[in-house]
Length: 411
Image (cartoon, rainbow, N blue to C red):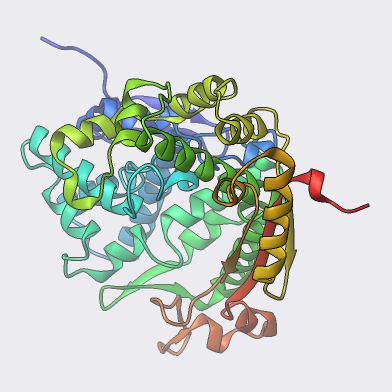
């Protein structure tokens, strides 16, 4: 008989003690699919900018579980009926919402596999776990897939003010040391309520919502879209693309068995058998770091140089601008680098390229953050806030970038 105590407690630097609510949640946390999140960085390559940002998706998932417990407690106190089955389904859904992330989180989302979003892979993992756990994830999957009629439950999992965003803003701010990202998640949760099965924030919590949205905007520009993090992630993506290209040409590219499979095969969502899902579950940050260390010494100049850039943090120069960079400028820089290093133009474009980034703290198109006013009416926070800049946050801001080797910088 197994006498393992499954009601464990984690000591978290953000919230203090996090309690596992029941044996099923413990068993899910113990599963190798979930334990893999210990080896997936929460903030990709942001540690190249903020040295403390080395926390993992495992940290984040547990944090989300903790604040979901708080939210359910508050909503029940305010007479929202939540059954024990629904409670457990919410715990499972928020715990597993990020289980489909690949190495370095978003950095390689569309390069390990072909245009498959991490949420889609998370659902594949949840379905596989549901088979292993005899259907105990049925309700969690319904909520995750937006198939459960109680709308507020999905809003707690995925919305413009969900448990995911509340935890990652607070956690990433803490580990990066960026004070501007601090939010008062306790206050936000205390102000939550449910009206007609829709999540609302009581009017006295509107300033906390405004602070939350401002913090999100600042964290995106200052951390998630920081130009050094951005160029590091783009370089990592190009490195993997080059490895795949070399393999297609019949050139050996040594790496771990799990990474080798995805370099050698083009995998899209329809290809995800249980066997391929298991192979994906073997991938984590260590596969990528190990490969980059090997590839530094590869005979291919492009693969070797890109790998060294990340390992040694000697990255490409990146410039941001409000206006688009011209194709002619990119072409000229690529030709200059190609000539200097005996490369063809296609190879040079691994080092010289342009693109754009977008930031929108609050979307008018997505499900709004609803404020419950004292007279019982409900309004979109952007319409009733007295902060003029809050309305500006719903405007999408686009910036354009160009990346190129530092040796091309003109004196």
